[in-house]
Length: 271
Image (cartoon, rainbow, N blue to C red; front, side):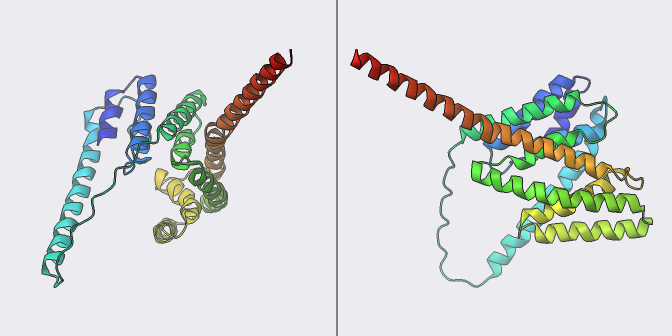
């Protein structure tokens, strides 16, 4: 809902929308439970709303948010009732959640990577479908900490490559509507079931589902799976640059400067 409000507020101002996207990504980096959802919400709602959205464009999202909140409230009430009815021993005080220190380096990396992706996406041709995948790729790939980012890179690159082939086959086959719906639902259920096991499965099954659902009942051209893969590869390159290449280069130059300083001191002592 907040993403819809930002999209409406920045309507007709592309750079304001770009700044809002970066700001939302930073908020997600600061709040662990939000994560990439904040930036994704702004990007995807802006794509869905189109040019010049009005307040009416936010109504479906408000209804969706209210529905989700109602479902969560019902689940919470049922869970509390089940706990109250359960026979159990003496209650133990719940441990206080520890406060997670803010990883400023991660925040800076997210802001830098998303800003680069947004800037490059703005330079893409207007008739190119899927430029937003460049931004979403960065948002979904970059993680707190380099080891987690390295793992996510491998998962997304391998999974999206296989997923692009599946998407091209499905889009190129143009199956009947009932068959397309059945295959899409099966892939989506498979993605939900296997995502907790390994994120790679989500990356494999995601492209066909997204490309079918995005234009349903119409079809993207078969090569859009390749376009999406190309955008994901570009997003991965941005993440590698920001998270690994730039810090490594900075460390190298710092060591070089330190070595030069030691060498100069030694020369002065010899003199």
